[in-house]
Length: 495
Image (cartoon, rainbow, N blue to C red; front, top):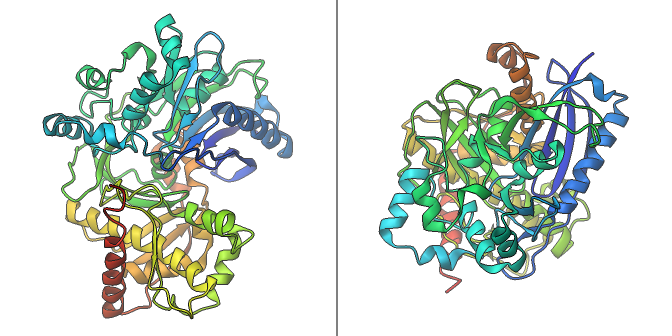
């Protein structure tokens, strides 16, 4: 037997999953890592801890599956995007905490950019001007962290997204990224698929500290014999997590779409080889690029806080002990009793892009309970998704009739039913729901011939469940209008 391993490094945890040729999970292990919030708007991770967890889950997955490393044909890597790590090339150690995609510390710097520069950045990168993306985070590290400055001066500084960090550690010094991750940095030109020197100059970032940009599916290098795999295995696939989910959901054709429910929510629509520039608050991004084939692009809507809102109920408010408990609690009431929760903890992403917004719970009365807040949290996930899919329809001119979904929250029947009710379309869940890790595995497997074609990958996809809307048009319209009223109350909070 032979298998494909996938490393899925997410915002809250790291997983190693091992797949067979049918796309079935044969072994897996997962571990959370710590979240650091030292100041309002700051979100950090310890890259050293992430590497430690990565080594642990690799060894646990191999052991639990009774698999030999020699049976693993290739490795795919997928990762939380935009999060930035700076490390020393000599020691291989991080120089600072990793700055996470949710972090908003660079908002003032970005607000100071001229309209001319803002327009140039939007056109070249397909992104909006927001602290979400990597460029301003790298600029901040270069200008505010002494260890980073010193490493830069001595020529020992390397910077990259999490995929670059893990690939560096796994191979013992290979400094690369793929086009999907590079497209989220605000430093890559969408048309050339290379670092843009004019943009690098704007942010004061030297090109030599950045990784080389590769396709999403090719042989990049092999793992160290002394590393956690204990064998020299090709790393052959790298994709940002949302792009990996597109591959895992077999969204290879123009017009296909999926929504992933994780720490945040991310919806992508494949636009083929055409770069479609959004007029409704969406992002234009690389969808994937397989080897020498032309890159395919996508429109994307990003929501900062969805699954992490449930973590907030668990960890900060402590109204549930485990994330899985929200289903029963929210189901114990038939509605939210007029309560709306907008979890704009670090501003709002698509389609608003307002870093001045902050979270709000509105519509509270004396009769509101923790069950109503739990249900309002699930509804918030659904309404935020509704808004980005509405924007997608407006940009593409294609009305959605169904939506493929994946990610942890799809385990909640109530949340998926609420999603169908809010959007008025069918929600479809695949049989294999680990689509992010699976997509990275597919990219790696395709590169080495483990899977021969995209048609073979598509044949693995099958439906598990679907939810049809139960609410009428008027009920949906009323709920959406109240949601937008609630969102309006979160704006202009940060001066």
